[in-house]
Length: 381
Image (cartoon, rainbow, N blue to C red; front, side, top):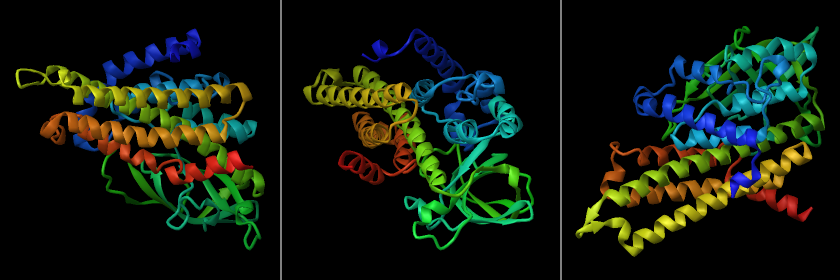
Protein backbone atom coordinates (compact mmCIF):
# COMPACT_ATOMS: atom_id res chain seq x y z
CA UNK A 1 0.00 0.00 0.00
CA UNK A 2 2.71 2.49 1.00
CA UNK A 3 4.76 1.73 -2.11
CA UNK A 4 1.94 3.00 -4.30
CA UNK A 5 2.21 6.38 -2.55
CA UNK A 6 5.98 6.75 -2.96
CA UNK A 7 8.00 7.92 -5.93
CA UNK A 8 10.86 5.84 -7.32
CA UNK A 9 13.26 8.30 -5.70
CA UNK A 10 11.55 7.77 -2.34
CA UNK A 11 11.86 4.00 -2.70
CA UNK A 12 15.52 4.21 -3.66
CA UNK A 13 16.20 6.40 -0.65
CA UNK A 14 14.36 3.94 1.60
CA UNK A 15 16.46 1.04 0.28
CA UNK A 16 19.63 3.04 0.89
CA UNK A 17 18.66 3.87 4.47
CA UNK A 18 17.58 0.29 5.15
CA UNK A 19 20.90 -1.16 3.96
CA UNK A 20 22.81 1.43 5.95
CA UNK A 21 20.82 0.83 9.14
CA UNK A 22 21.12 -2.95 8.97
CA UNK A 23 24.82 -2.98 8.10
CA UNK A 24 26.29 0.02 9.92
CA UNK A 25 23.97 0.58 12.87
CA UNK A 26 22.17 -2.60 13.99
CA UNK A 27 25.33 -4.57 14.93
CA UNK A 28 26.47 -1.83 17.32
CA UNK A 29 23.28 -0.69 19.06
CA UNK A 30 23.56 -2.97 22.11
CA UNK A 31 27.17 -1.90 22.68
CA UNK A 32 26.19 1.77 22.46
CA UNK A 33 23.34 1.07 24.87
CA UNK A 34 25.77 -0.36 27.42
CA UNK A 35 28.13 2.59 26.98
CA UNK A 36 25.17 4.99 27.17
CA UNK A 37 26.32 7.17 24.33
CA UNK A 38 26.57 7.40 20.58
CA UNK A 39 30.23 7.46 19.57
CA UNK A 40 31.63 10.08 17.20
CA UNK A 41 31.70 7.36 14.56
CA UNK A 42 27.88 7.25 14.61
CA UNK A 43 27.50 10.93 13.76
CA UNK A 44 30.28 10.69 11.20
CA UNK A 45 28.47 7.87 9.39
CA UNK A 46 25.19 9.78 9.46
CA UNK A 47 26.97 12.79 8.01
CA UNK A 48 28.70 10.81 5.28
CA UNK A 49 25.30 9.51 4.17
CA UNK A 50 23.94 13.07 4.04
CA UNK A 51 21.37 12.42 6.76
CA UNK A 52 22.44 15.29 9.02
CA UNK A 53 21.69 17.76 6.23
CA UNK A 54 18.71 15.89 4.84
CA UNK A 55 16.39 18.93 4.74
CA UNK A 56 19.09 21.48 3.89
CA UNK A 57 19.11 22.74 0.27
CA UNK A 58 21.97 21.51 -1.88
CA UNK A 59 23.34 25.02 -2.34
CA UNK A 60 24.21 25.04 1.37
CA UNK A 61 25.77 21.59 1.36
CA UNK A 62 22.67 19.57 2.21
CA UNK A 63 20.83 16.72 0.54
CA UNK A 64 17.85 18.82 -0.51
CA UNK A 65 15.39 16.23 0.79
CA UNK A 66 11.74 16.64 1.77
CA UNK A 67 9.56 15.73 4.73
CA UNK A 68 8.74 12.36 3.13
CA UNK A 69 12.45 11.55 3.14
CA UNK A 70 12.60 12.47 6.83
CA UNK A 71 9.77 10.06 7.64
CA UNK A 72 11.44 7.28 5.65
CA UNK A 73 14.72 7.88 7.47
CA UNK A 74 13.05 7.86 10.89
CA UNK A 75 11.10 4.68 10.25
CA UNK A 76 14.05 2.70 8.93
CA UNK A 77 16.31 3.79 11.78
CA UNK A 78 13.57 2.99 14.27
CA UNK A 79 13.33 -0.58 12.96
CA UNK A 80 16.87 -1.33 14.15
CA UNK A 81 16.08 0.30 17.47
CA UNK A 82 17.99 3.52 17.25
CA UNK A 83 17.12 7.20 17.04
CA UNK A 84 19.17 10.03 15.61
CA UNK A 85 19.28 13.83 16.14
CA UNK A 86 15.72 14.44 14.95
CA UNK A 87 15.56 18.00 16.28
CA UNK A 88 18.85 18.80 14.54
CA UNK A 89 17.33 17.80 11.21
CA UNK A 90 13.67 18.68 11.61
CA UNK A 91 13.78 21.75 13.86
CA UNK A 92 17.22 23.37 13.91
CA UNK A 93 18.20 23.10 10.26
CA UNK A 94 14.63 23.71 9.10
CA UNK A 95 14.31 26.83 11.25
CA UNK A 96 17.35 28.38 9.63
CA UNK A 97 16.29 27.23 6.15
CA UNK A 98 12.79 28.66 6.50
CA UNK A 99 13.46 31.75 8.62
CA UNK A 100 17.12 32.63 8.20
CA UNK A 101 18.47 35.33 5.91
CA UNK A 102 21.16 34.58 3.34
CA UNK A 103 24.03 35.46 5.68
CA UNK A 104 22.67 33.22 8.45
CA UNK A 105 22.15 30.33 6.06
CA UNK A 106 25.69 30.52 4.69
CA UNK A 107 27.17 30.93 8.16
CA UNK A 108 25.45 27.94 9.79
CA UNK A 109 23.93 25.50 7.34
CA UNK A 110 27.07 24.06 5.64
CA UNK A 111 28.60 22.99 8.98
CA UNK A 112 25.27 21.68 10.24
CA UNK A 113 24.63 19.75 7.03
CA UNK A 114 28.08 18.16 7.20
CA UNK A 115 27.64 17.18 10.85
CA UNK A 116 30.55 19.40 11.85
CA UNK A 117 28.07 21.20 14.09
CA UNK A 118 25.05 19.63 15.79
CA UNK A 119 22.00 21.71 16.61
CA UNK A 120 19.71 21.61 19.65
CA UNK A 121 16.26 23.16 19.83
CA UNK A 122 15.75 25.01 23.12
CA UNK A 123 12.09 25.59 23.89
CA UNK A 124 11.03 23.58 26.96
CA UNK A 125 11.46 25.12 30.43
CA UNK A 126 10.76 23.83 33.96
CA UNK A 127 7.46 25.70 34.05
CA UNK A 128 6.78 25.82 30.31
CA UNK A 129 6.37 22.46 28.64
CA UNK A 130 3.03 22.03 26.96
CA UNK A 131 2.23 25.63 27.92
CA UNK A 132 4.91 27.12 25.66
CA UNK A 133 3.53 30.63 25.91
CA UNK A 134 4.43 30.83 29.60
CA UNK A 135 8.20 30.53 29.04
CA UNK A 136 10.24 32.92 31.17
CA UNK A 137 13.53 33.06 29.22
CA UNK A 138 14.04 36.68 28.26
CA UNK A 139 16.26 38.48 25.76
CA UNK A 140 16.63 42.20 26.39
CA UNK A 141 17.77 44.35 23.49
CA UNK A 142 20.83 46.46 24.36
CA UNK A 143 23.27 48.38 22.16
CA UNK A 144 23.14 46.18 19.05
CA UNK A 145 22.77 42.85 20.84
CA UNK A 146 20.32 40.90 22.99
CA UNK A 147 21.13 39.94 26.58
CA UNK A 148 19.71 36.45 27.01
CA UNK A 149 18.85 34.86 30.34
CA UNK A 150 16.95 31.65 30.90
CA UNK A 151 16.99 27.95 31.63
CA UNK A 152 15.89 25.22 29.24
CA UNK A 153 15.31 21.57 30.14
CA UNK A 154 14.84 18.24 28.36
CA UNK A 155 16.91 19.48 25.43
CA UNK A 156 17.77 16.62 23.08
CA UNK A 157 21.53 16.17 22.71
CA UNK A 158 22.14 19.57 24.33
CA UNK A 159 25.42 18.35 25.79
CA UNK A 160 26.98 17.71 22.38
CA UNK A 161 25.34 20.53 20.42
CA UNK A 162 27.34 23.49 19.19
CA UNK A 163 24.43 25.52 17.81
CA UNK A 164 21.25 26.28 19.75
CA UNK A 165 17.96 27.49 18.34
CA UNK A 166 16.57 29.35 21.33
CA UNK A 167 13.02 30.55 21.97
CA UNK A 168 12.85 33.49 24.36
CA UNK A 169 10.62 36.46 25.04
CA UNK A 170 11.65 39.98 24.11
CA UNK A 171 8.48 41.62 25.37
CA UNK A 172 6.73 41.37 28.73
CA UNK A 173 3.27 42.04 30.12
CA UNK A 174 1.42 41.36 26.88
CA UNK A 175 -2.27 40.47 26.96
CA UNK A 176 -1.33 37.45 24.86
CA UNK A 177 2.06 36.20 26.22
CA UNK A 178 2.79 33.98 23.22
CA UNK A 179 3.15 37.08 21.03
CA UNK A 180 6.29 38.05 22.91
CA UNK A 181 8.32 35.02 21.76
CA UNK A 182 11.30 35.50 19.44
CA UNK A 183 13.77 32.97 17.98
CA UNK A 184 17.57 33.20 18.04
CA UNK A 185 20.62 31.27 16.90
CA UNK A 186 23.07 31.01 19.81
CA UNK A 187 26.60 29.63 19.50
CA UNK A 188 27.67 27.11 22.12
CA UNK A 189 30.94 28.93 22.82
CA UNK A 190 29.19 32.19 23.69
CA UNK A 191 30.14 33.36 27.22
CA UNK A 192 27.36 32.57 29.66
CA UNK A 193 26.17 29.36 27.97
CA UNK A 194 26.51 26.25 30.13
CA UNK A 195 25.15 22.72 30.39
CA UNK A 196 23.48 21.71 33.65
CA UNK A 197 21.84 18.46 34.60
CA UNK A 198 21.59 15.53 32.23
CA UNK A 199 18.41 13.59 32.94
CA UNK A 200 18.64 9.93 33.93
CA UNK A 201 16.24 8.29 31.49
CA UNK A 202 14.18 5.12 31.52
CA UNK A 203 15.24 4.46 27.93
CA UNK A 204 17.03 6.09 24.99
CA UNK A 205 20.29 5.68 26.88
CA UNK A 206 22.42 6.51 23.86
CA UNK A 207 21.05 10.03 23.57
CA UNK A 208 20.70 12.67 26.24
CA UNK A 209 18.17 15.18 27.49
CA UNK A 210 20.01 18.10 29.03
CA UNK A 211 19.54 21.33 30.90
CA UNK A 212 20.94 24.37 29.06
CA UNK A 213 21.54 27.57 31.04
CA UNK A 214 21.88 31.06 29.56
CA UNK A 215 23.31 33.70 31.90
CA UNK A 216 23.75 37.20 30.47
CA UNK A 217 24.57 35.75 27.06
CA UNK A 218 25.25 38.46 24.48
CA UNK A 219 23.48 37.41 21.30
CA UNK A 220 24.35 39.59 18.27
CA UNK A 221 21.34 41.24 16.68
CA UNK A 222 22.21 39.51 13.40
CA UNK A 223 21.50 36.16 15.13
CA UNK A 224 17.81 36.98 15.46
CA UNK A 225 15.76 34.58 13.33
CA UNK A 226 12.25 35.72 14.19
CA UNK A 227 11.25 38.93 15.89
CA UNK A 228 8.63 38.75 18.64
CA UNK A 229 5.06 38.74 17.38
CA UNK A 230 2.54 36.19 16.18
CA UNK A 231 5.08 34.73 13.74
CA UNK A 232 7.48 33.55 16.46
CA UNK A 233 4.91 31.43 18.24
CA UNK A 234 3.41 30.26 14.95
CA UNK A 235 6.78 29.13 13.63
CA UNK A 236 7.45 27.25 16.86
CA UNK A 237 4.14 25.43 16.40
CA UNK A 238 5.05 24.65 12.78
CA UNK A 239 8.31 23.08 13.91
CA UNK A 240 6.35 20.94 16.36
CA UNK A 241 4.27 19.69 13.43
CA UNK A 242 7.41 18.61 11.60
CA UNK A 243 8.82 16.95 14.71
CA UNK A 244 5.52 15.13 15.21
CA UNK A 245 5.80 13.54 11.77
CA UNK A 246 9.34 12.34 12.49
CA UNK A 247 8.33 11.20 15.97
CA UNK A 248 5.41 9.20 14.54
CA UNK A 249 7.65 7.57 11.95
CA UNK A 250 10.13 6.54 14.65
CA UNK A 251 7.23 4.94 16.54
CA UNK A 252 6.18 2.99 13.45
CA UNK A 253 9.76 1.83 12.95
CA UNK A 254 10.26 0.76 16.55
CA UNK A 255 6.94 -1.08 16.52
CA UNK A 256 7.87 -2.84 13.28
CA UNK A 257 11.22 -3.89 14.73
CA UNK A 258 9.63 -5.24 17.93
CA UNK A 259 6.91 -7.00 15.93
CA UNK A 260 9.42 -8.71 13.63
CA UNK A 261 11.40 -9.97 16.62
CA UNK A 262 8.25 -11.26 18.29
CA UNK A 263 7.10 -12.93 15.08
CA UNK A 264 10.44 -14.69 14.68
CA UNK A 265 10.45 -15.81 18.31
CA UNK A 266 6.90 -17.18 18.10
CA UNK A 267 7.83 -19.26 15.06
CA UNK A 268 10.90 -20.68 16.81
CA UNK A 269 9.55 -21.21 20.34
CA UNK A 270 8.25 -24.75 20.90
CA UNK A 271 5.73 -25.50 23.65
CA UNK A 272 3.41 -28.49 24.00
CA UNK A 273 5.12 -30.06 21.02
CA UNK A 274 4.58 -27.26 18.48
CA UNK A 275 5.47 -23.71 17.61
CA UNK A 276 3.57 -21.23 19.77
CA UNK A 277 2.68 -19.37 16.55
CA UNK A 278 0.20 -22.18 15.90
CA UNK A 279 -1.89 -21.26 18.96
CA UNK A 280 -4.89 -19.10 18.14
CA UNK A 281 -4.33 -16.71 21.05
CA UNK A 282 -0.81 -15.97 19.82
CA UNK A 283 -1.87 -15.65 16.20
CA UNK A 284 -4.54 -13.08 17.06
CA UNK A 285 -2.06 -10.93 18.97
CA UNK A 286 0.35 -10.99 16.03
CA UNK A 287 -2.49 -10.05 13.67
CA UNK A 288 -3.54 -7.13 15.89
CA UNK A 289 0.07 -5.92 15.99
CA UNK A 290 0.29 -5.99 12.20
CA UNK A 291 -3.03 -4.11 11.84
CA UNK A 292 -2.07 -1.33 14.25
CA UNK A 293 1.37 -0.84 12.68
CA UNK A 294 -0.08 -0.59 9.19
CA UNK A 295 -2.78 1.85 10.34
CA UNK A 296 -0.19 4.09 11.99
CA UNK A 297 2.07 3.97 8.95
CA UNK A 298 -0.79 5.05 6.68
CA UNK A 299 -1.64 7.96 9.00
CA UNK A 300 1.96 9.15 8.98
CA UNK A 301 2.30 9.01 5.21
CA UNK A 302 -1.11 10.60 4.77
CA UNK A 303 0.12 13.56 6.84
CA UNK A 304 3.40 14.07 4.98
CA UNK A 305 2.06 13.50 1.46
CA UNK A 306 -0.73 16.02 2.04
CA UNK A 307 1.86 18.39 3.48
CA UNK A 308 4.07 18.08 0.41
CA UNK A 309 1.13 18.98 -1.81
CA UNK A 310 0.21 22.01 0.30
CA UNK A 311 3.77 23.16 0.87
CA UNK A 312 3.45 23.12 4.66
CA UNK A 313 2.88 20.52 7.36
CA UNK A 314 -0.78 20.14 8.23
CA UNK A 315 -1.35 20.46 11.97
CA UNK A 316 -4.38 18.18 12.27
CA UNK A 317 -2.96 15.27 10.29
CA UNK A 318 0.40 15.53 12.09
CA UNK A 319 -1.33 15.46 15.49
CA UNK A 320 -3.57 12.53 14.51
CA UNK A 321 -0.58 10.51 13.33
CA UNK A 322 1.42 11.22 16.48
CA UNK A 323 -1.38 10.47 18.92
CA UNK A 324 -2.18 7.15 17.25
CA UNK A 325 1.46 6.13 16.64
CA UNK A 326 2.56 6.93 20.19
CA UNK A 327 -0.12 4.73 21.71
CA UNK A 328 0.24 2.04 19.05
CA UNK A 329 3.98 1.57 19.53
CA UNK A 330 3.71 1.32 23.32
CA UNK A 331 1.06 -1.39 22.95
CA UNK A 332 2.96 -3.31 20.26
CA UNK A 333 6.24 -3.28 22.18
CA UNK A 334 4.44 -4.35 25.35
CA UNK A 335 2.86 -7.27 23.48
CA UNK A 336 6.24 -8.19 22.00
CA UNK A 337 7.59 -8.58 25.54
CA UNK A 338 4.54 -10.65 26.54
CA UNK A 339 4.95 -12.97 23.56
CA UNK A 340 8.56 -13.63 24.60
CA UNK A 341 7.36 -14.67 28.05
CA UNK A 342 9.94 -14.27 30.83
CA UNK A 343 12.68 -13.94 28.22
CA UNK A 344 11.10 -10.71 27.04
CA UNK A 345 11.82 -9.16 30.42
CA UNK A 346 15.54 -9.90 30.15
CA UNK A 347 18.18 -7.83 28.42
CA UNK A 348 19.17 -10.85 26.33
CA UNK A 349 16.31 -9.99 23.98
CA UNK A 350 15.99 -6.51 22.50
CA UNK A 351 12.25 -6.10 22.94
CA UNK A 352 12.59 -4.74 26.49
CA UNK A 353 14.84 -1.97 25.16
CA UNK A 354 12.38 -1.17 22.41
CA UNK A 355 9.66 -0.75 25.03
CA UNK A 356 11.79 1.53 27.21
CA UNK A 357 12.84 3.66 24.26
CA UNK A 358 9.42 4.17 22.70
CA UNK A 359 7.75 5.23 25.95
CA UNK A 360 9.55 8.55 25.80
CA UNK A 361 8.28 9.43 22.32
CA UNK A 362 4.83 10.11 23.79
CA UNK A 363 6.21 13.23 25.48
CA UNK A 364 8.43 14.76 22.82
CA UNK A 365 6.87 17.17 20.36
CA UNK A 366 3.66 17.46 22.35
CA UNK A 367 2.03 14.87 24.58
CA UNK A 368 -0.83 12.74 23.32
CA UNK A 369 -3.21 14.93 25.35
CA UNK A 370 -1.88 18.06 23.65
CA UNK A 371 -2.34 16.31 20.31
CA UNK A 372 -5.98 15.66 21.18
CA UNK A 373 -6.42 19.35 21.98
CA UNK A 374 -4.81 20.24 18.66
CA UNK A 375 -7.05 17.84 16.73
CA UNK A 376 -10.18 19.09 18.46
CA UNK A 377 -9.22 22.70 17.75
CA UNK A 378 -8.74 21.95 14.07
CA UNK A 379 -11.99 20.04 13.57
CA UNK A 380 -14.11 22.53 15.52
CA UNK A 381 -12.80 25.82 14.15
